[in-house]
Image 1 (cartoon, one colour):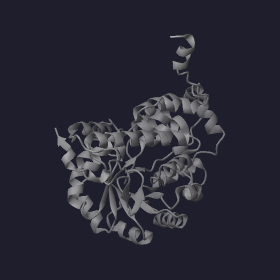
Image 2 (cartoon, one colour; image 1 turned 180 degrees about the vertical axis):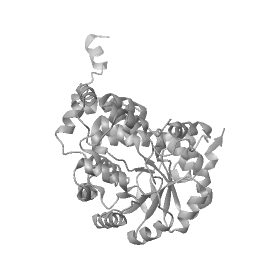
Image 3 (cartoon, helix red, strand yellow; image 1 turned 30 degrees about the vertical axis):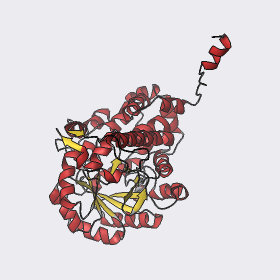
Length: 404
């Protein structure tokens, strides 16, 4: 072979000069995104994203539960075309995924919620703006209204002591065009996230010696923080004042007296698709159905509230069997692979909410990083369906599973 022929066979790849693109190209799984995010974020910020309550037993159980299920493939099926789209709360979505609500998002990346919302719109899936968001719900809605091709965003709410503020947030979300209201019900009091306590996490970050030393090793993060507006809870800042006052205000608002009686007026006030997030038992799922909601999210808050509760995948079957004929059942906590999503869908979930995966991607590459996280999971889900011999997510049922 002549030198010219050898050169023709060589594939010389042009080096990627964009740092974010280069890092994302090296991430082939959500686990890779997590590893890269850990290198790019200050320890306190990464631990806020990655950590859970107390001994973090529940967080580990969420992952371990997937090992209890075996997938059962059928061979020699025509799987040339696979449909990943589904319908959630009466709207078509390109994937059985929802980007769930997360707090302190602009601590992870200066574009924060706007980047996540744009990524969701680009991939044709819902995004859930959070009450504890660091960008106002109006700014999020305005950013993606045109790109989304319709009101695809959801808004997440807590029942706070100040019911007037709850009503105000419901009204603001409705006027901004949010399609669904997601009420988080597993936080009568905050969970004990001990990594945050040990790290002395504050919002905004205090410039103590530990913070400065950690930030010195990650100047890109500090530069992003310093060139953006102060990080605070944007949706409630108007009633609480400056950043520190907002933190204290929010801490006083968690209400341990909330009961199912509080759901009825919220369902009526919202007047649209209503989701209760934080259900882990058949009994509570039935109470949600009786309260007139449209869907429940089987959730243990990613292990960030009560430690030592069971995995959401374990609770999913019980909830689906109890109310699956009456309500849409969604699930979150611990999803890191397309096969995880396939397992949940086969057990009866309509879709999966993603929390940490979106934040890992956001930390690595902003909007493109969130899109990368979604794309990786979508590719894995597509491959899982093809290897199972299934051509549509709607065909997934318990016949493709075997409990170990």
